[in-house]
Amino acid sequence: MKALLLADTHLHAGQGQKLTALLGDRLRVAAAILHAGDITDASVLADLSPFAPVHAVLGNNDRGIALPERRVVELAGCQVAMVHDSGVGAGRSARLRRWFPDADVVVFGHSHLPWHETNVREDGHVQHHVNPGSATQRRRATRCTVAWLELLAGRVVSVEHDPVG
Image (cartoon, rainbow, N blue to C red):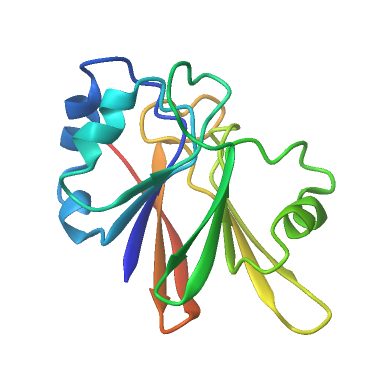
């Protein structure tokens, strides 16, 4: 299964269709959509939901949206955890492992910077840490991005960043 990873879209009411147009055919490929916060308006999630099941967490700029700050969903036999702000870069890998010890993937946002690293526990369990970047506001990143997470039968097949626009 392929999951489309988003974060930090920062869109207001009535702007969700701007995002769906920007994402285009990506939405037809996605079996699930994960949004790591800073959605800004719940209508954006409603505009994404006709394409695939949407899982999201609350970001620091989200107001009046009923979402958890952290969550874990099971996709294709994998535990995929989500949080908006992973904290400062120093110690991030250990911190995410501590917050979500058994997750196969942790998706986070906040910085708008695309990121992928792995953390290997002593018993060999590999955990992927992924920030998809932002599809709408690149800020310090060189370009706007989303990420793809491919999962199959309880394992992570690939993680890829995909430039947008």
